[in-house]
Length: 111
Image (cartoon, rainbow, N blue to C red; front, side):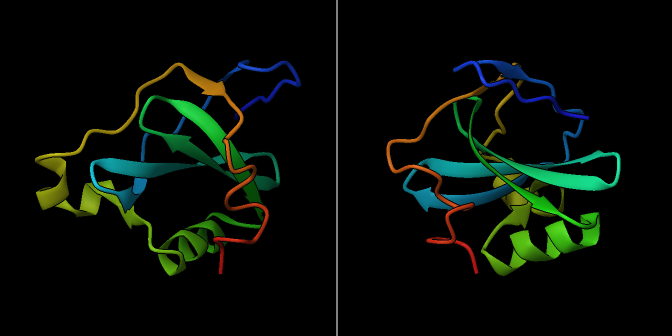
């Protein structure tokens, strides 16, 4: 379960370490972790330096996985070649603002 606080730079506890990633620029990735809490599923979007910059809620884990894959995210555990040169962010995960606002939850970059 994850908790988000209103306070800027609050630590968010995410239990999953089943990382999804999307290469957005040379040597830069957006990361995602799927977190189940109660009847809700949240995808947390994290940059390389462990800052959470966005989130989306889904009705199920399968819906979250499907959305990630549809939007160009790949599961790190299923990509041994990528594991050789990219490394996922590590906790603590801190809530941060993104310079471009909510990237995925705004719908601008989410199909």
